[in-house]
Image (cartoon, rainbow, N blue to C red; front, side):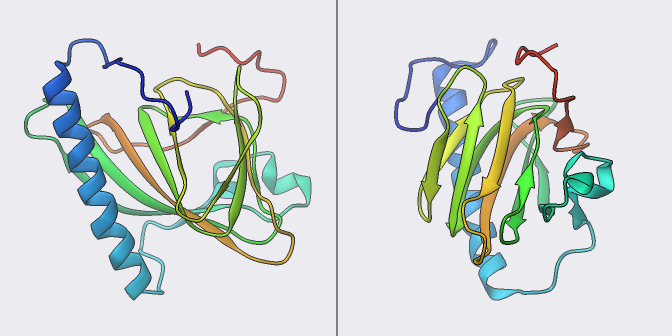
Length: 180
């Protein structure tokens, strides 16, 4: 599902109003988080490299992506759900292999240019200021920095279970592109 087209779909069990309120909360949290990120350069204590999760990127010879969780806030009007905000840094030529996320994700490119592809969609290129949406369970075939010389980064906003657990679940290369 691309960010360029808004379909009149809401997650099961949520009214359109509650869904839009949750999206607005995510947008506000994202804007605040992006401002905080720009003003601080030290990675937060929870920063982790994708390779630390035993991903194939660690063995591909390409630089790995670093996820820097910023916050995880329960949504008081949607029991059991939370908004997690993270910065994802892509060194030059960095690559993230096939994966999915435990909740809905909106990604906003803070700097650089990223290539990305969701299962069933064509590969897309996103530059600073552009965004995309990944519904819960969507298979993200890859994400990579389009530049071999310049870093890129994005702001990722997850709406998922309140436990603020793993943000990315890696899949084997032979996974057929359907959520399991």
